[in-house]
Image 1 (tube, rainbow, N blue to C red):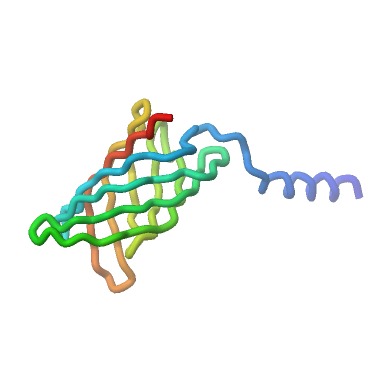
Image 2: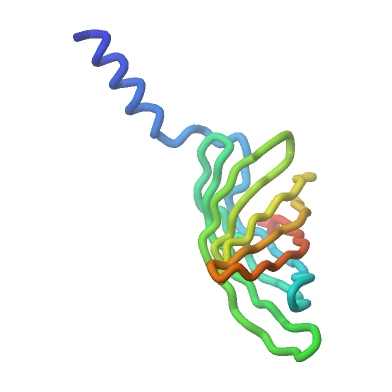
Length: 135
């Protein structure tokens, strides 16, 4: 009986939030460029609201402006990701399509690339930069 309780207790503890090793909580200013299929400038806020161990969750809210027409659109959705290597962050943002971001952290800045794929098979890609908002 003791062994069964110990194993059960260990399983229950594994789902508790772990201390964060990332220290990403808070608001980040997001800037980026969608390079295809239509060129857009992207600006907005990445908000990290929950961390556990090397993983995190939050929300990304953007405005995309078509560089040819000047037309804008609002994008927003949930974010989940983790540190996938030393100072490398990998996260998915569920906007109109899932956008996979991979970037490198240097101090309070993360820069990298993203690629998106929607359920209809349309692909998009671009670059991004997020900087921690000063507190």
